[in-house]
Length: 268
Length: 272
Figure (cartoon, rainbow over the protein chains, first blue to last red):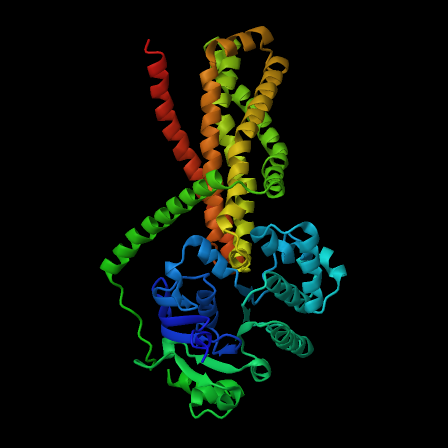
């Protein structure tokens, strides 16, 4: 058996994270295997985005270890850390395009910052990534403020793809989009996976996205309401398993059933 | 009955938080300043990024600095004239106006204008970038936010505030002179004679040196507040307001510190 298949690409080992006195994640462990599409679900505020930012190295854990290909990222030298960070592309919830740069410069940013590629090469990559996300080159001269929500997300994805990452993290990629555009983004997630050997981590509340793209699902539960001693990852399995889960919290979430939550609120 | 219990007020916890919060902010600010200095000396920003900031900070601040300098020169002339006339020393008006401008009001007012116009704008811009995750996006794309965002603004403030101060001083001196000679009837020869007699080059240099420290303070405070802006329009607004208040207090503190140090330098250079 190939040893690469045994070493997760990314791993959180007993990771906790708090902001001041407020704990968000406690003793979380998870593994991301090469090539899979892992979907994180859970209520707003349960720590999904914090988890992805820990995985991407944008936040450091308060306790526990983040492992990259079996190596603790704390042990990486700054240059190795930068290299590792560039192996991860990140599509932000709001796309987070740089307001002061046009679409072309947004997509070219990572290349200009980290490579010595010539302008012609950068231009080829930028236009090629625009095609990958279903946009034409006319868009390249536009400023982010001139784009619709769906276009911003696609430009954000093109920017993440431009650095040729091994992993792409999608933070709520369909939030705020109409159903058709949401499906366009879902199809893009699938086509990106088909075009290149990329591992995907998707944070979403959208069950349509979950059904369409997930190989494996993890559900996080808010720390503030977690019974003492219980693991914060309350579900791990496939989309089918989630839709037929015995745990009422998982079942309620994936079916959008508010009765359990309303019961909790009235009890409080 | 609600099962949610409110934590009881604990004076020890309250006192601890009261001490720890400002200490941690000051510590964080010191680290932020050190990182900025490290990046400034290790890797300069790209030309287009630096020029854009120099234009924003320097060129666009010129009108407000000139207007402020001009009015302050004339106000000083009006206020000082009455006092000097009582002592029949109105011919020395030039020395009072110009000394005050060059040593104190020129640098402090140019810095105050910069804190209001540029500092608040920097805090609002970086605060918006923070809350819209653009700063996280920079990190995700391998750029260091301090190197990319803070260093060009820091250099812009530090390099251009001496020039803005010189311009504010010059316009203030000219306006004070025109007002004094045409409206207050002061003889132009004595106006400049007493100016040369009382103002040394050291006074001019001390004002410019002070202004550099003011520029550094404005850039660091505004960028630090912007980086720590809380989410929402109110968070960005608070960061901009804090920038002006903290910068202004820091400018006055640095002015006081420079006054104490420079008075010792004057004594050391001229013991008599």
